[in-house]
Image 1 (cartoon, helix red, strand yellow):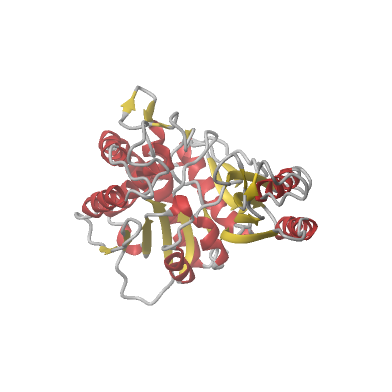
Image 2: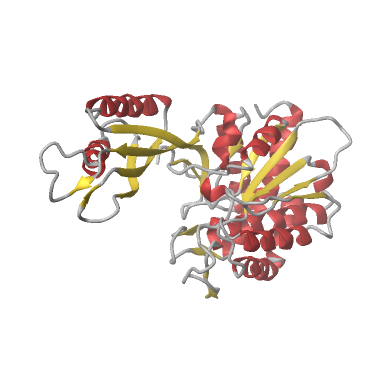
Length: 405
């Protein structure tokens, strides 16, 4: 973690608007939990289009009482996308919100159902990121109740395939980001109240090796084994961990060969690379190129293809300015927040690449996402919703006054 600036607690400085908004959301706490339960009980793994579409329509209906523009964008392979916007007659910059409806859990996962106790909610996607969706939905509902939402030109993209890199929604994020003055992404906050101002970039490669097939009993000397060749490269790539600041390399999948008594003609491996800097990616690419040249021998073919590339979300001064707004509101609410540079990537990386100031981690507090131990701190649903609503108001007012950036 690069940034750890703790914000002091100070509940004594809330004005009447802040008190009314927080009281309203506190009253909505039970309803927020009920909505979250409904969403969590819908299995919406990325490849489960039917499940993601159900979540999409649930959210569409939740916005029915508000006078907002709602558009469902039908998709074939992945779940449908949903765009919700506050109408505006003026041609002005907007506020972009982002939240994904998919989870990593497939339709037949053993991790299903809902459980709760006095302190926590448990279930698939409860923190990544259906809790963030609930935080945002109720923040907008609270602003609408207090007649404040109509003055905020918000566009919210609910995408359906973030867990696989947002292949279909990425162009939409770029388009809307370029129209927006700022963006807020509702991924989970950490247990210390982390707000994300920067994220590592993410690169996924497929390494492919081709050798020469033969009977294992007959080919001993000069064997052209694709698996053996790839194994040498895998060991060297894993050895890059710790060689350059912040760069991590992981071989997450391998496959090859057809039967034990045949020299494997083909093999492949999936490589996950993360770096906080362009220099880190340059280091990795240089090492990879050297490895590919080293392993190119007669009768063998080895190549690397980019499967996915998520740009770095740099911790810019404008991102930090948004964090400072959030920190100010958090202080008045008595909520601790910490500035963080996060290792994982999200749609915030794409928004940042478009040049738009963005912060992430505005969702509720929780832990153990991507596992069957996933949980959400239930009190953080309404407190983080209040924080988001007040931060949207404050950031937009400062932006219009010319004092934010």
